[in-house]
Image 1 (cartoon, helix red, strand yellow):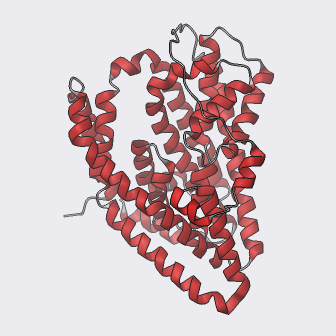
Image 2: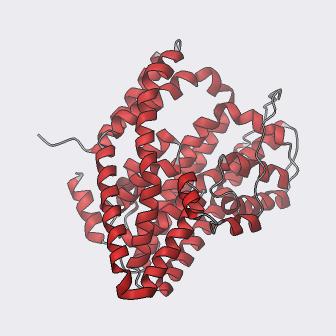
Image 3: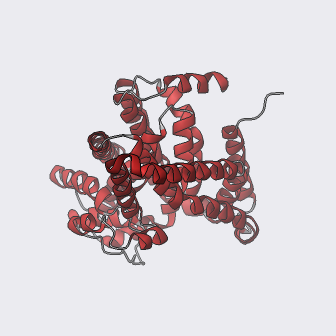
Length: 412
């Protein structure tokens, strides 16, 4: 009898979790008290691996590039891809919001205020990339600083040549240990997904979702449209990869991201899928994917555009073409300006609203369904990370197409 694939098991766990959540809606405390802890435990197992995995794999990935020029070339391609797709994503969001008239006919009272942390200036963010205390950055899980420190270590190992081999071998071995740990943790993914989705459905039942159902549907449609148009185009044109094969290969990470709503939490699975299913070499995945989990926010950009338009309509305000262009620019730059900041999505939306003079209190309108929106936008974020890794690998001539073909054959 053919062994059931992990992807299938995760889908089954997701479906059963949704079903149980619906059943437990009259008593959501049961889901929160007795089911959610298993999901929290699984998420903690994932989180414990993130920092050591990112740091060790980035060092090894940097060293594997052999010279600093290659590192700069790949870094340039990665940032260009992320910036372009983010700008395109928020454009799709605004176009869809205009076409569907997403906030038309709504008149929702706002009786709550949302406290939004102040977004750091771009200059401050750039200065903070270099950690004054790298150990503190590792302890705090500051991804931008961890990435910078790892790149400095890796580049320095390349610089000293033969003398750096001992340190390289240490990080290489450490990274392999982390891959093994993740492999074991992933065997429990179906249970984790089941336990994470059940309380979400039980607590956020139809009574919360229905009043804002149109907003949810438009955001989900925008994310799906972006995946179909942007990722299908880039992987097929620049990487010559069949989009169906791409989405099939990254699907386990997509399902996990949808359930957890955490790009960083999904990072180990994204790396595993990219390397084992899509043929991305570790030297590139270990650089592109951690960076993407921090600064790439395609799904969040779609959310910004649609929600800003929605809030404007609810308040009876019009967004001119100039204002919508401002939203595109602000959301694109904010994806880097808020990188690594807790609650980045909310901060980005606050920045976008301020940029065009919309009331920040409007965020309270969507606060009740933000978790539902976060699930979809996170899934698109990590899919964009994987698409970038495939494109960069292909343009560098390092994409293992045999792995992609084998993955499809095995899954038939």
